[in-house]
Amino acid sequence: MYEIDIQTQTLYAELLEMMQIVEASRTISSLKGSFSIKEDKGAEYVYFQAYNPVGKLEQIYIGPRNEQTERLMHDHAEGKSDVKEMGEKFKRLSIQIQAGIKIRTDKAMTRVIRSLADVGVFRHGGVLVGTHAFQAAGLMLGVCWSVDASRTTDVDLAVERKVAVAIPMVDADIPAALESLGMGFYPVPRLNHKDPSTNFAIRKSQLRLDVLTPKTQESDSPVFIKRFNCAAAPLSYLSYVIESPAHAVLLDTNPVLINIPQPVRYAMHKLIVSQVRDVTSEIKRRKDLYQAHELLSVLQENRPFDIQPAWDNLIARGPKWKKFAETGLAAMETLYGELEIRLTEPGKQ
Figure: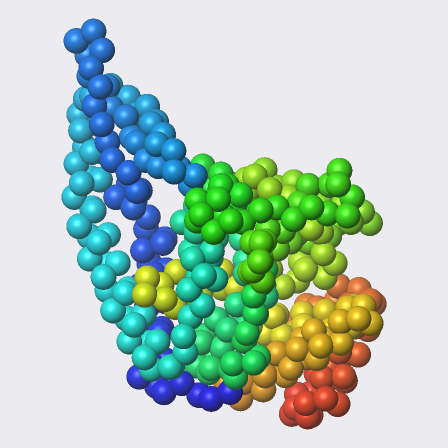
């Protein structure tokens, strides 16, 4: 692990802020596609046409050509140049940041995550929860991890079963987005062939996408998430880590705005995950604890006020949560060294 120089940290903060502003103010000009006008029996009608994720051209009827639809077409055309200009700014900043941190992005992995972003997965509440989130959390905190700590071939995407706020856009079709990449993704069959697949892989490649959702009942059966047109595997203790996610930037020539867990919650969650893995997953267990230790070390130095509230929230969820978190914390310090963190139970000093 090493600290990123202040100039590069400032550039990252600027890029993140700009991308958040653009995302929050998405307009008709952000839509990829074009308007067309059709004539029928002497009247003119306006359609919007765009290619869907699998490459098929689709047309959506907007309405008769009138003052309102003319304004819509005008705004779309006017805004295109602004969108292009902002995209060029994002690209320049991202290239500068990558030069400052001297870390290469995995192009294949980035293509997959960008395709998810392009169809609205993150706008629909999707959260990256695996090692990609760990990498992005480091950039948020102004550090870069060692290559070994941040290497992965998996994309772990967590989704809530329902979203609290209705999002005014079409569903984010995950299988269609993967198919559009032309990389050969296929749904991996489960042991029970009656269950829908919750992960996607490429033959003769280690690249893989796993779709997860918080477990709300005893059943381990996959849960179909309509807005993503795919099933997700229910996972215990996942709800804590995907609550109140943070925006982050996945760096590439064209950077991608993504959702990741709050860094402190990612660390706390790894303490629990390390204790619920089966005995055959010792390497993964050590990686969980190492990532937790790295994050908590940085947070202890830079954002110590984040730690106790996150711990309070976690252990208040029940005795099992508390037991696994405390055991994971002790195991982490045994393996990687004690931290100057003094956690107390809620209501106690």
